[in-house]
Image 1: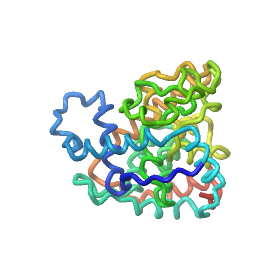
Image 2 (image 1 turned 90 degrees about the vertical axis):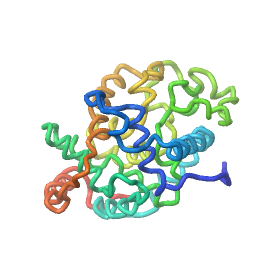
Image 3 (image 1 turned 120 degrees about the horizontal axis):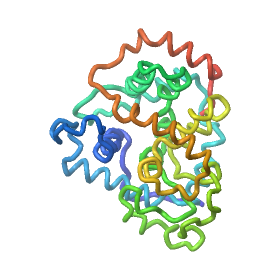
Length: 292
């Protein structure tokens, strides 16, 4: 199935930060709830809200079961490029968002902020590595993928869309919402079938999980695969598809997410000083090159 997307698409360089800022708006740090709206980064003006809404209109319209099947068949061959993790970091750094008025941090510095916060709290080294590389799948943008097929809240496809997903009204334009195979509570799935048997909307989470599944411990893989699945780990909207083991592993997802959302600070980490530690850490768990 080849879909042609002729409508206006959201550019990665104009909306990467807007999507991430929208997460902070929807899921503010509970420990800093006393902050006034003005103290947060300016992501509530009308232009940015319109950008996020347009992002999710596209995402919810085109993220169908067949679309996910097509993208998995294409990208999970991992035949686009072979490079070391450090080459991938340099590649990812071309996604610096020049439109963001509040930070000039590149992707490496965001990853380091996340992983250094994890390390400071004394978590295992594989947890630190997960924080360092959790957004590596965003290289999909550099392979020509539109923003709405790389980032954004993820959700199951092949069953009814929950009204707990952000902007649920946009699913009305998704063909699966009127397809009797996919528009019931369980759709093509069985009760408590387990998330490993559920197809998620396509994006950087699933892509990186598939790349890393032979190298990292299971809790790390859950963190990578489901860190954008907010309708479950914040709203419990899909517990009917999960096993007891899924719920146990989601304790790790819940432990990871605050580091991703709330570790951003204006002072950049000293990437040069930190690099030897991360070189050793990457070498401990990963091969010298990875296929993307």
